Each structure stands twice: as C-alpha cells, then as structure tokens.
Image (cartoon, rainbow, N blue to C red; front, side, top):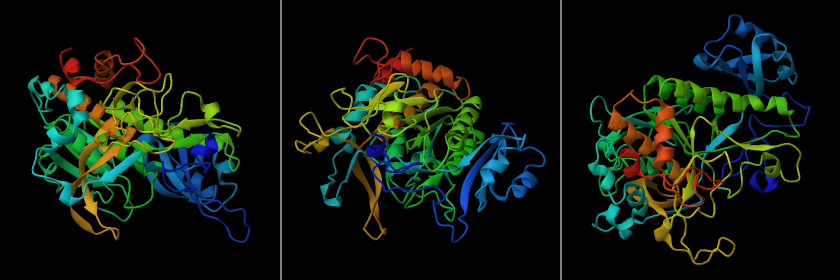
Length: 457
C-alpha cells in the first residue's frame, strides 16, 4: 500500500510526480547540498550560540523561525545530522521535506461558452446548499460571516494564492502574502486556492458558506512544484501573528518513518515542526482546519499504510488539535477517494464526487453535477491568464474550506477573539449530523457539518 501511495520516501504530491527533498545521491563524485530542519528545545526563541553550533557542524542557516524555535539549514556535510544532534540545544533535526497542495481527486474547468447568465449558486452549488440548509443559515446571527459586533472575521487560505481580482471574491479579499521564494505576489497561478476561497467567501455568481467572511491569501506554492515545510510553518505562524480567525490548510503530505535512505529519527523533525506551528496558531486563538487526503485509505493504521515496507506512514500535517475533515458527496455518502480512520477524522463536509453510478475501477458512469463548483482563474497551456472563471473539483481539499468557513461564521456569531479554538471545534462537532453510525465513526467523525445547527447552539 505504501508503494501505491508514495513511490517516494519523503513526500509526494497527491497525483503529482515524486520529489525528493534536497536531492538524494549515492555518488561520491561531488558533495551534495541538502536542506535540513533543526528544532531547538526552546519553543519560543532561538537559543544563544546556535549559529556557531550550526556552522561548526558544517551547516549554513538559510531561514529562521524564531517564534517556533527552529531554523532551516543547508549543508554538504554528510555527517551534519550526527554532529548537530549532539548539541544540548537541539531537540530534533532532520531532512526537510517538500509538501504540495492537495491535488483534487477530480477537476474540470468550465469553458467560457458553458457559463450562462443564470445564478451559478442556484444552478450548481449543492454543496453550499447542503451545509447552509439552502441558505437558511444566512438569516441567523453571524450566519453570513458578518460579525454581530467588532472587526471582520478573516479566514487565512494557506495554499496556491487567491485570484483577488475574481469578481466573486474581490469584495471579500482582505490581503495577501507570499512565502514563495522569488514571488512577491499572492496571485493564484494554479486555481486551487481560488476554488477554496470561493467555497469560503464567494459572493457573486457563486456563494460561499459565509458570503460576508473575509479571506486572506498566504501563498506557499508557486505555479509549479511544492513548498518546504518551513515555508508553510512560517505562513501559519505569520497568519497567527496577523490575528486571523481561522486557517485552512488543504495540503497533501505524508511521512514515511522507515525511509531506507534515512533513519526514523532523521525524519520526525519535519512532523514536529508542523505540530509546533499548528500549536502556535491555536495558542494564539486561531482555529486550524485541514483536509484528510484523497487516497481512499484508512489512515489510522500507519503500519498498514507502509504495506510490504517496514516502518509506518503518517498523514501530515494531522495534529489532533486541528479540525480534520473527510469528504462527503451530495447523497451524504463518504466519497470513493476520501481517507478515513478512527481518531483521524473530526467531521465530514461536502467534497464532491462523480455520482452514485460512477465506478472508480472502470471510470464509467460519471456525473459532473455531483462535483463541487467554485471560482478559479483560467489559464492557457502556456500559463497565460485568460479570464476569471469557474471549475468543478472534487477532493477533501474542497471539504476542509467549508468547515473552515463554518468556523468563521460561528466566530462571527460570538465576535472576534471571544471563543477559543477548542470551543469552535466543539460546536462544529456537537452540531454535526449523524450520517453513518450513531455518535463517532471512522468515516464522518462526529458527523456531517451543518451551519444551521451550529448557529442555533
């Protein structure tokens, strides 16, 4: 099973090609520069003397995460990890991996000629209707995301950026920041982040769960390729410092804790950094939401995920303190691609699929109307922008933002900085609709999210 999912020891984009972090070479012809994460025992600051310690171990600091007690390091010294771990300052050190936006299980752009002047929410957005009870939640206090009192409620989208000029999003766009080296603009050149943003706060021809919420782009992915863990951690840390209310992370990542190229102890630093960043945000009052992944497997059994290989495979990031979301269909079913697992799923939200007659094995019986419809920028094959458009997607990355938006409207009901993240999570869980087994189950967690029930608590 592990080989089916991965084909790479460190990280793989869901549906994308294999990328080894820092490069791996068994040739001794020339020293190979590798990227590492070093995590210090002090979580709140970088310790005195750390730069000399890194230099003495043969490394160069390339990035600092002061408030997380971590640094990025490059080194050609094959003994770097062994040396740096001997320091009394260091808690963990390991190879830095590459994380990718979670590729949709299915996506299909809508050609300009296919878009009529009809209301696209009424036409296509069964998923938004499912969560809002056909818009009934919008008549409740805070239900549109407009705060009952105080400042705007902001949902940070840690993703590919946002098409902030899209007519269905621009009025609810708060601001954007880029953490992609060489790219200062938070503009979305992929479509994934804009689709997520439209599901949260679309207000135009499409509608989001909270059409008066604000979205902020924290761009961590360039037009191609992935992002180093440290850059995502920095984006999450920055969002928390910016006092956003909710963070959505529709990321695709796994960690294999028995990589033959590295010892287990050399891999876990990456996971620890993610957990530190998530905890940092939650401690600053941010509700953090993440997707469960699109491999259609039980992620509660890391040993089984490894298949014929030794060790264990874990979904990452997947902290128990965040809200982890599986994907449901229009018929309130678990979608064929959604990951699941006892203790790994908190709630289910609509992520879309290809209908009840679709056979994943033969790929027949497809019905696109069961997919999730939202905003995207449209580009040609050369990467040239065409227009602000729309697309059908399916994935747990479409389910997570609906839950993030629900968190936003719950916060809007009570006011900014009033509820703690654990309280927001409890409201979402306790108000969810039982769709499978009574109570908690491995597919939907505590159930299918419901905005009306949540706002009536």
